[in-house]
Amino acid sequence: MNVLPGFFFYLLSAIILGGAILTITRRNAVHSAIWLIVTLLGVAGIYLNQHAEFLAAVQVLVYIGGIMVLFLFVIMLVNLDEAAKQRQFNHQWTIAVGCALALMAELAYFIVKGRESFRFGDTGTGTLNPDAAVIEFLKSCRDIPGLGPGGFLQPNTELIACALYRDYLLPFEIASVLLLVAIVGAVVMAKKEI
Amino acid sequence: MPLPFIVITLIKAIVVLIVLMTVAAYLVWFERKIVARIQNRWGPTRVGPFGLLQPLADAIKLLTKEDFTPAGVFRVPYLLAPALSLTVALLAFAVIPFGPGFQIADLNIGLLFILAISSMGVYGIVLAGWASNSKYSLLGGLRSSAQMISYELAISLSVVGVLLLGGSLSLREIVSAQSGVWGLVPRWNVFPQLVGFFCFFIAAIAETNRLPFDLPEAETELVAGYHTEYSSMKFAMFFIAEYTNMVTASCMATILFFGGWHGPVPSFLPAPLQAVVPLFWFSLKVVLFLFVYVWIRGTLPRFRYDQLMSFGWKFLVPLALINLVVTSFVIALRA
Image (tube, one colour):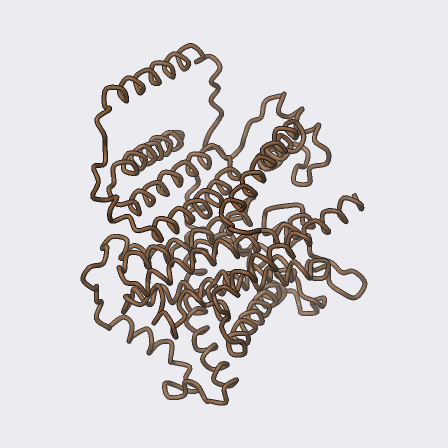
């Protein structure tokens, strides 16, 4: 049974990579969008495989249920017949290959260099095994309703809440103000008179 | 994963599926009868007593009709769209608790799961509209995507108040938190969250594309909207998906705001019958909500498209936000 998490990991990775390649090679923009949706679903599957259920649900809710619907909406509104006739790739293969190789070398270097720091939890057993630091962290969060003594079955929603609203409150608020600025900017640009 | 667990889950899923399909089929009959009564007609009377066999006749008709694929459609998305609609509609029932223990899977993020799944429901409609390669279908698909995104926001915001009261994302725990009474009234979320319930139910009607928000398939202007080019079983799949979504929305209203399987009065039945009491209350509430659905359909005229959008964004979303702020403020004060 221990083979299953690995199997799903590789299956989902294949779906993600295949979907990503199809996203950039399709001529029809709607097809590209559909493959991007498949890719994002694969990422949600990876989260689920790592027992990050909250993250998986939010991934589906925000990216697939929100952003990609808007993408499709715009693609369908805009007439893309002209774009489909254009040449799809330009002649900058050499530069692209160089960039890709440099990125690959960089990633490989970091993975080889830092392989000691990768820890693999017991995936697929249905429980997270938080280490001592995480348990301390959970205890330090004030009264978490779903967590009884030793109840570490579902800490991921609470953990994210603690991280976002306590430890990283300032960056979180800055990010939300940034988004607000973007929204106001979009409204100002779209409206002729306010 | 042990074998008995898989077998039991499979049996549960099959039972839920059979019951659900029956409910969806008879919901059509129920709707036709009640709308007929509202409009001073008889409704279906010919097939069986009170037209009770009408759903069977409809099913036979839809199954045996020619499965026609128009020329010029984008084949794969065209075939995929109805299946996607139905699959997504049925998936939501994996986490809905019908009674204590009567639940296929108790996810710790059950509520988010339902929101995520129902947010994917729009793809069936959008893809159907696009793949049909017809202007009516495309307009229907575009309308539905705009409508569903707008009203999803209101649904999510109105549900957060319930989350704050229940303290959990698990549907079973949300229902458990609503047991007991305050004096004479049961501890249902609808009493402290009346505004939230109002927003939720209106947005749920819009989310399921029902009158008065059925702009995606407004037959006076769009023929039949996104399913104009569909016939036979493929049309039936959209149809079943829509009615299944109605049942899901009613179940969610029951679970989140009306105490789920908890009855308003203590049970006095003998012990062997005690097990079915929660199921009875749950079904009764769901049927009541379905009746309200049909009632609204029979009473109200359809919105205009700009009215629909401005109602969603300028009234429902701000109202849900205010409700959220007030609720969290009160809870923070009492903590």
